Each structure stands twice: as C-alpha cells, then as structure tokens.
Image (cartoon, rainbow, N blue to C red; front, top):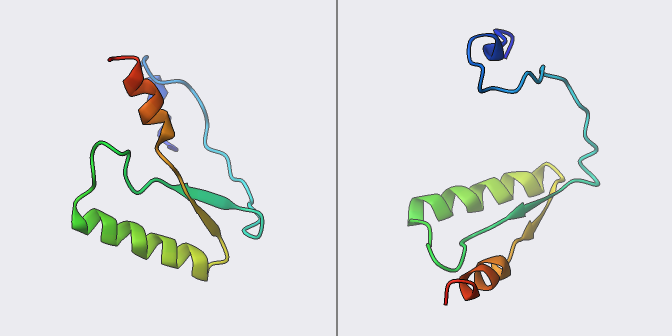
Length: 78
C-alpha cells in the first residue's frame, strides 16, 4: 500500500494505510462455517478449524455465525 495504487487506478478509494492496536482480550471474530446453501470443501473446513485454534491460543475469541440472513433473503425469491 506504500505504492498508493489509487494514483494509478481511479476506481480505488484513496485510503492510506494506518496502524492500529487491538486488545485481544476484547476481540471476537465471527466464523461462518457455511451459509446454509453452499458448504465448503473439506480442506477449507480444516483451514477454518486450524485458524480458530490459533485464534484461541492467541487469546482471541471466536463466535459461530449463523446463516439466518440467507433464509430471510431466500424468502424474497419464492
């Protein structure tokens, strides 16, 4: 991002990189295992499990995301 790609591509928004500090004790990351329609392949599931394990070891909480929004949207197309 140091190359400022928005100077070459007008479709990009000029947002410079900034550093932030996070408190991992208060950080929770939601994990969506599937959307209720398309299920990931086994290697993707394994990668998600490994990621969640690494997050836990780092003190970061994870929450499972449900797919109720897919059910709500799909009723619009019936």
